[in-house]
Image (cartoon, rainbow, N blue to C red):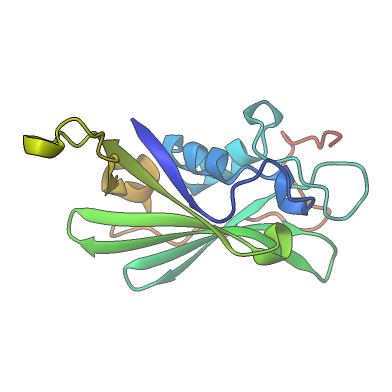
Length: 184
């Protein structure tokens, strides 16, 4: 099955604001989304239980906007909270690299300001390794196989030749009519 590999210290709580944003959950929503607008909506839907950030301290969950910074065949999809009229805080970035016509890899990188250190996760598959011969009685560790995300709908969408990079139209104190903040 599809899993996520975390390249950071594993612990349930760091006491940092990043404890209130689920990077793995965000990757799962990204995988399910048809485009970046759909992904932004899913990130900001309370029942998806990914975002519980209140960075401006007003006792209401902050809206996360999605911005695609495209550079050639690479995309950095920023997840960003407008915390005031003048200031935005990056929560994480989903970095996608296209390696050939039908292959792309991605990772989500949690911002060190929120996580205490840069926290990186990548989708991967585990495959059991069968051993034969004298060592057959010893369990081999599972082989980690990185996932080609080319088939994910959102990845297909952003690599369409007619795609214009998504820049969320929302900003501090201007949010979509369907969105209502909830309490953390």
